Length: 136
Image (cartoon, rainbow, N blue to C red):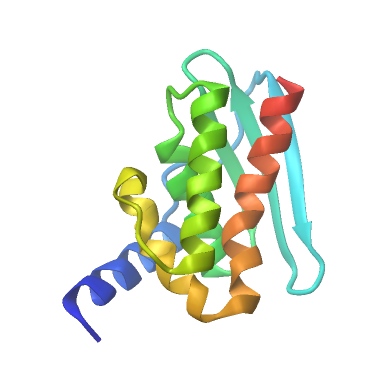
C-alpha cells in the first residue's frame, strides 16, 4: 500500500469512528434522509442555511459515515450552486477513481471506484444533501 493510500485509509477510519459533524441542530432549515436497503446504510441530515452548516446522524459502514462527515466539512459556507458542483465532482471522482484537487480530503474516497458496490455508500450522504438543499 502506498503512503497516500495509507493516509487516506487512516482518514476514512478516523472520520467513521469519530465524526466531527455528527448530531442534530436544535433548529434547522431543512432535513433529509437517505437509505440503502441493500446494505443497511441510513443517514439523516440537518441543514442550516446561515453559513451552510450540516450535521448528520449516520448508521452504516465506515465509507458512508466518513463520506457524510467529510462532506459536512467540505460544504460549510458554500452556496447551493457550489454544493451542486461539488456533488457532481465528487460523483465523478468516486466513479472514475481519479482524484480531483478541488475536493481536498474528499479525495480519500477515490479508491471506492475499485469496489463498484461501495459507490452507493459514498454517494448516499450527497443524495440526502441534495434533497435538503432543495427543501431549504
